[in-house]
Length: 456
Image (cartoon, rainbow, N blue to C red):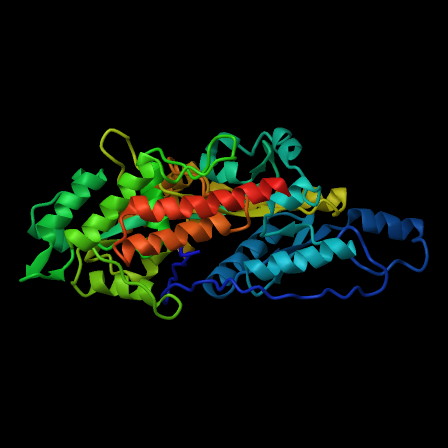
């Protein structure tokens, strides 16, 4: 997966979260508890005074999250703020090494019957198997939740078979960053770059060549399938048919869009990609081209904002296509859930914690401090956010884009369709293979994988 999730820091550049699968086996101490609390059973029944004291004690819950660095520090502050805001619940944050480790450790905890009450993790298949609590009844009974204020694509990503199992804590999307001075030099108003056709025309105008060699590029898409898939979705394309049985990556929406990118990169040479290298090396090179004056702009993560000098850089939404309205790039939610094996009291407490995190002022604060997207549309109206946005208008671009974004593709084959698309993207972007040919090869591979999936 090349859709980078970076974070914005107040004192130094963003920190990417490594997605490293680590198998951790959970050892149970004493007898197992199904509610995520103490694993040791009391040796005797409490007397009446002890029972009364226990009934007045706050509900303690564990919250597992795989965040470190600036993200982890901001999570710690929010947990402390929640605990100080009321006397009935105490959230104890337990840091995991990554998102992946959270999921791996949760799997072991479910098997052991000793789960936390809240996790920054989601799994649709586990929800179908009953391992996560359905949240619709909590939301329906909560007049303060204001479901309509949650960015629709983020809320929908937490749904499984039409039921809400997970709530979005924050989100990410890819937006456009450009050099204000370069566009001004060529008399280009960024407000006019609302279509890919207009962007390509502007890129051609800004490109500089020495003989047959481009020395300055009008735009730099990011290496990988994601940018091109965003553009396909903005034209109305899809990966699968409505019934989920047919791969649909050879339609005109796909072929025409991907071939535009191939032509811009290889034939017109008004755009280029950096590829290969170690880790995020290609990403850094793309950013450096714009920062150092070798390209007019690039497409990158909402979390890149900590790497950019906004005295010379500005941000705008991804464009759409002529005749297709606004762009519809993917906006991806980071979701949290409540394990079904937690006690009723702890489930209710976990829901209160999630609701606190999602309050407009808190999700706005999270966005300002991390660069990720606030999950509520009303976050833009928060006074602190509004003041911050006046000085940092780029912070509102990802949030605005997320209100009309596409949901990320969920691969039913466990990654085989996505792998076929990634290979096809390399053939188009790097090898200059016509999109029709590359996508036809990917279609055959992906359809075979999908057919095998449904035969299981």
